[in-house]
Length: 172
Image (cartoon, rainbow, N blue to C red; front, top):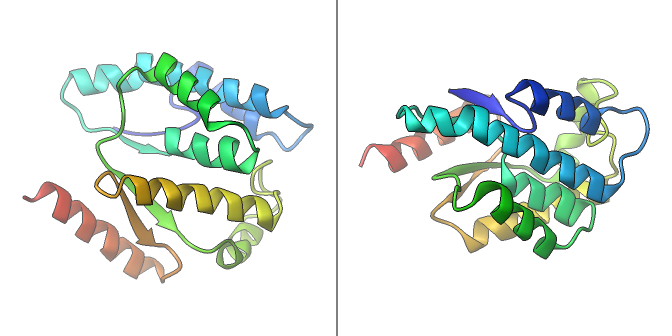
């Protein structure tokens, strides 16, 4: 099953629209709480039932993104995020996370090609540098779960690295 965060359920998609809307500001703690509200709906209504059926779930972003964006990006304490993670997810964690990494300077052009973008895409370069740093720190702390892919390469090369990582992990 393919899904995304925030999103995946009607409630989570509504929260996604609120969080990503380029209109107005969302206070950092409110943003964090909306992310976890969306995540709980997503887990209870979509992810857990799929896993219970024996399905694989491929999710575009999950809690690592919260540590990166709301933690490092917005400056919220990781202890607060960890508390919410435990309350909302219990012991549920991804088996594998593929971190598509590129320096923020390399992604500026990609963001510009997509147009105005959402609230996150409109952030300054320093915000993305903090986010990237948090992702890389998490990857360094959990190298067996978080595998880093060089996303600054051309798309066919990135795709080949993803396939190689999946084969390494699942074709044992």
